[in-house]
Length: 115
Length: 119
Image (cartoon, rainbow over all chains, first blue to last red):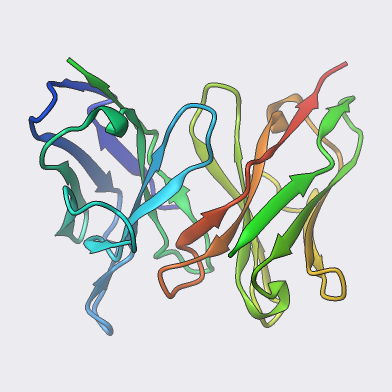
């Protein structure tokens, strides 16, 4: 199974500052045949289901503010919030969908708070 | 508008069974990829199962042989039959529809239903 490890477990950032969350997979999730990384990011606020932010490592879901961006390839990925807003307080999860047979694994989550 | 509404959660004893339902609207379950994902209280997300539009089904190792995903096309509803339940199955269970143009990117989520396995 592919294990996803996020760092840090929690993060406090000042409003307007940059927040960076890292995700590392135990094996590459890059598929050469289509040049895609099978990596997504989700945001979960208290009492709510997760919300898709990013897929294919860097494609922003429709309606997601452009302060959210994803980067990385292979085994190392980053979610960046360029200018933290109060409404961004949440837990963030990375997810791989590369496995065969099909399966999903999530990172353990990173809790983002306001400093 | 895509909507997913889970139901069927509750308190069940270890070894018991429960069937969860996920009523879908705004899309056709039989033509899409739909998953179940669970979240134990205060914990992270764990994928449980997926059913493909062609009917293929896949499961996490932790539930294989105990849980069965299925759908009723006439009711546009997804199900999760859970047997031989264990305390570690206690969680909020979400159904989620594929987004992002691929089966296992979860673009739409229901609000979840709580399953508690306890004596």
